[in-house]
Amino acid sequence: MIRPEISFEFFPPKNIEATFRLWDTVQVLSPLNPRFVSVTYGAGGTTRDLTRDVVATLHKHSGLRTAAHLTCVEATREETLQIARDFAAAGVTDIVALRGDPPKGADGFVPHPEGFGSSVELIEGLKEAGDFTIRVGAYPDVHPEARDQAADIEFLKRKLDAGADEALTQFFFEAETFFRFRDACVKAGIDKPIVPGIFPIENWKGARRFAENCGTKIPAWVIDAFETATRDNRQDLLATAVCTELCSDLIEGGVDKLHFYTLNRPELTRDVCFALGVTPEVKLENVA
Ligand code: FAD
Image 1 (cartoon, protein in one colour):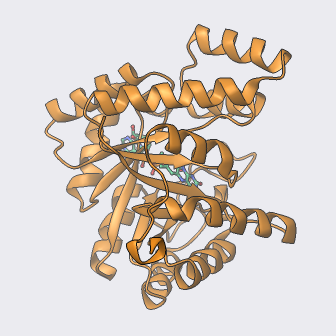
Image 2: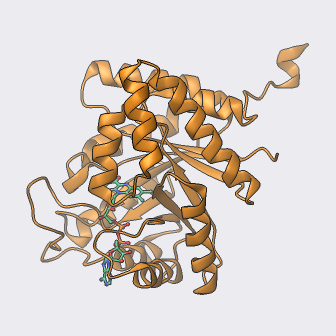
């Protein structure tokens, strides 16, 4: 089995304890030599300054290639582009460009009167503003707002044609879901990389709620297995096994890059990576 290239998503911590946990996560996962790490931007644009600070700090102190998530929500075009320029000035040129989810309680995405109206417009703005590596979201289980999968893929193509370099997918439970999506994308003329998003499940209740909110279909066997494992207090073992098998199936089907949603909890992601043969890289000078 080939050794996949990996990347990790983190979220910005909101208090001191969470800050230590993020740093701990970085310490545990960085020896696995990720292609890049990314830092999310709170729904509704709520973590704008925090995301900016975390990205700059990670970039400066961890030695990891760091990508900043950026959304169109609740900001003018100028404010959004200024954030991107600030990232570039700090040496961060990788952006995950998203339309974003609206603030809690809001009823769907409403563009700011002077803001970007869609992810496509944001990508076009970023292309004009600087030399960014741009990644975008993709939805193997179909985004809840899409008319159908064909329309969803057509929109993904528009994002990539506007200048995005790569797509990172929402999480899903079965490799077949990803393969069907990948094949449909190729058929629609997409030739840029589509990297599966992998969610190691630490907390079944939370994962189930998250899946329901973002339109990820949960197969009946997953529900049965996690309900039983949670009752028997062996959720971690099941989560590691299920996640490792999903990744192995993807790799056997030709996938060579995986993007892990870590939720700032490193153990499960690390264990899955180890099981896939992704182990710390020991430098020769450290061995002698
Ligand atoms: P888009 O691709 O722009 O839209 C989603 C779908 O809606 C499209 O595929 C299309 O089917 C339809 N659609 C949208 N606009 C149009 C249009 N004008 N015409 C026709 N169809 C349209 N959210 C955050 O708030 N912060 C984050 O940091 C964050 N990180 C994420 C990282 C990844 C890898 C992913 C997959 C999602 C992330 N999200 C994040 C969630 C994301 O913001 C939501 O899924 C949001 O609802 C869609 O954002 P998008 O850029 O993927 O949407």
